[in-house]
Structure formats: C-alpha cells, structure tokens
Amino acid sequence: MTQMEAYTAFFDSAYVPAGEYVWLFVVLAIAFLAIWQARTWVSNF
Image 1 (cartoon, helix red, strand yellow):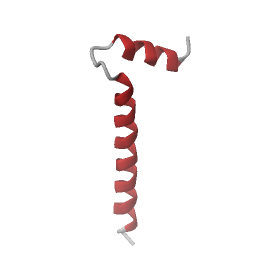
Image 2 (cartoon, rainbow, N blue to C red):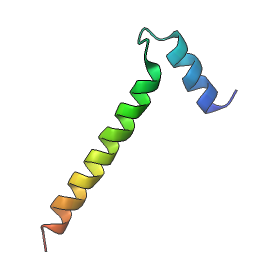
Image 3 (tube, rainbow, N blue to C red):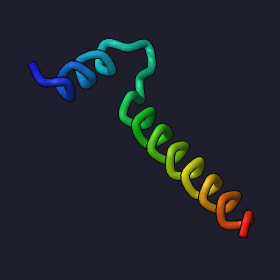
C-alpha cells in the first residue's frame, strides 16, 4: 500500500464525506501562504 492509497483509505472511512475537498483546501491554503510570504519578503526591498 502506497502512502497515497493510505490517505485515500483514510478519507474514505473518515467522518468527512467530502474527503477529496480536504486536499483542495490544503493545496489552496499552502498556495495562499506561499504567495503571502513572497509578498512580505519582496516588500523588504
């Protein structure tokens, strides 16, 4: 069992019915943080 299959099995049995949307939210949160960090870093110059 790969790590991805383990995560899929976890979300399938999780109490969150829309487990795939958790992935989307995590990706968006990381992207938002990365953009925000880049903005604050650029503003130092």
